[in-house]
Length: 182
Image (cartoon, rainbow, N blue to C red; front, side, top):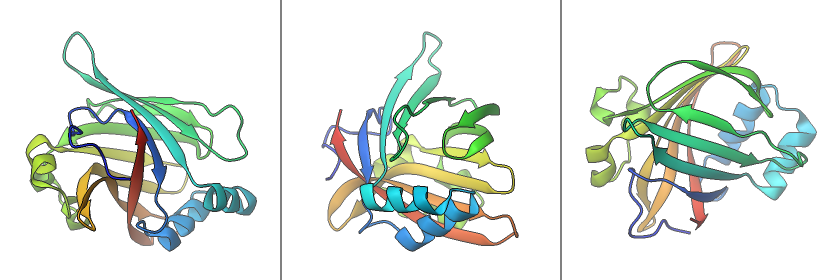
């Protein structure tokens, strides 16, 4: 489902489910495998799909915060994570990926070096800036940009990813999400 007309990158609050048909599903499964996610959990995610709740807000100083709560198949009590868009590294014990170091910011696509992370954004996303996430796991790195892309004539929440695996291999993927609710 497309994002509402009022949806902008300045408030991405909502509930989203991964749209496997529009996403690079094969790459996504390979990435999960290289992140150490077991076969049964990968199959459960593939079958049931991934859902994420995001609450986007600014604090009194105007700093953006994302509260992210994943709904992971087979995990009845997922642990949420907080992201502060200050490009400050924070360690997180993620329920799916284990111990990770993450930093997040808002950035103009033109400021990025990776062409994969720059491509496909709507004009309003380019103007506001994408949200960039840089996550380092035990043996891998995932860099994502989040924003709005027009896909099949509809505005969608999407993420461009450049993933570097344990053996130094690079995978480029696009993840597309259906907007479910605010």
